[in-house]
Image (cartoon, rainbow, N blue to C red; front, top):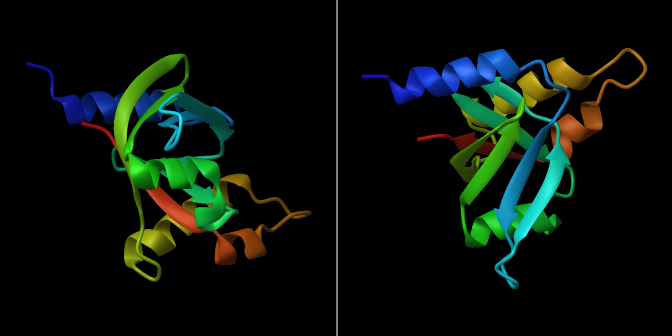
Length: 125
């Protein structure tokens, strides 16, 4: 029997160096898929995302209405459940640290994005 958790971790480890993932939410009004390209950071079988538009972003509004999402990464698509992280928690801080460490550069430290964004976790069954 294959452990689903280790399968997800292997997928994230294998594809974690991709520059971005594709997140598909279900439109809260239309019911149609809404696909975006997004920066991500994997850790512990989860994927973390930051929304610079906070809860004004369509994808965040969509996942608030229906947390079931799909993520395409490294040519493979997996179903997951998204949740907004509670501000100030250890997981919220970790998500911010992981994303900034992954995408910041000396020319763009992403400090403002790190501070103002809304953190989201995607968990995979």
